[in-house]
Image 1 (cartoon, rainbow, N blue to C red):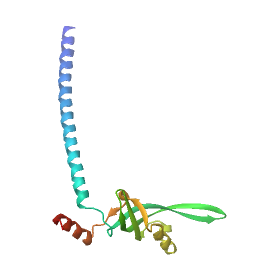
Image 2 (cartoon, rainbow, N blue to C red; image 1 turned 90 degrees about the horizontal axis):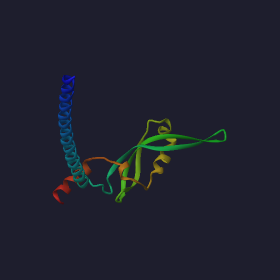
Image 3 (cartoon, one colour; image 1 turned 180 degrees about the vertical axis):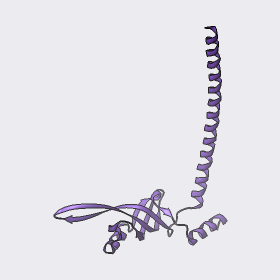
Length: 153
């Protein structure tokens, strides 16, 4: 009986030591994670300053959801489809962009129908959208603008 109690006491003591070691490692990992997240946020802020969105920039709006309304046998049938818009930035605010569609691509049959092309493009004419929904295209014009900004010109 004394041997069992001694054995259990030693096992409990070793378990506590093992838990303390794991707890310390967990704290270290959390500190490293916080440091990494902080550095990542700082780099993102630097990148946002470097790559400012300006009027005249080009971008894409991937998987923009649209809906086609059709009259079938006297019933209004709505058919959703998606397109990837190619846009030109017209105006810029803090959280929104005024864009003009210059083209689009789609894998859906409705989006590929040539009869609907002008309507799909007109839908996004002079429309305000969230900045988050637009991906800036890094063409030679944009790269030149970034280089000039780096040089302070």
